[in-house]
Amino acid sequence: RLTIGVLALQGDVREHLRAVAADDVTALAVRRPAELAQVDALVVPGGESTTMSNLAVAFELLEPIRARIAAGMPVYGSCAGMIMLAETVLDGRLDQRSFGGIDMVVRRNAFGRQVDSFETSLSVSGIAGEPFHAVFIRAPWVESVGPGVEVLARVEGGPADGRIVAVRQGNLLATAFHPELTGDLRVHRFFVDLVRAAR
Ligand code: GLN
Image (tube, rainbow, N blue to C red; front, side, top):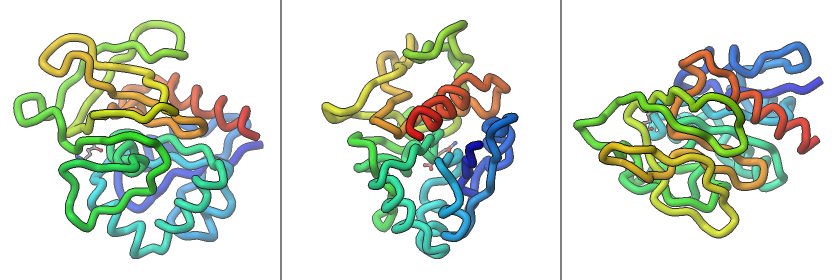
């Protein structure tokens, strides 16, 4: 049996708890280091990365999560969670911290005012089936990735055509969109499979 945590400091925690729970997966809200110690893997939800950064420091989770990532714990981040997994954050607040782990440069609120929030369809490499109905809400995009990072999805068409919006580096997975909001559980299942393989 797997225990997968959802970082529950801020953001759309409930949707992710629902999306990862399964017959053989216990979903656990993580607010303190003792809870982090119980999980095999972690989901970092969408929300507001500046607030999440503050709260991670205040709840003394920033360093423990960094340490778990360094030790190989699988983590999936969506939107603000993607920002939290970036080694480098552009357009962040000056004192904004991230857990890091993925060798990428992420730009916050990258899609700009006109397409602040939008929905589009795109395919994610490694995940079979129909294209995803991807929901972006004041989302980041990935400006650039290091050599160890696999690009899994790009925006297809429109003003942001070609922008990177899903990546994987080893046990770390990130999407700029919110699959937890559409009832399409393929990204979460992909992550759970990755967690199983890591164990
Ligand atoms: N704009 C938010 C941030 O910078 C992310 C938005 C989201 O998670 N939907 O943290």
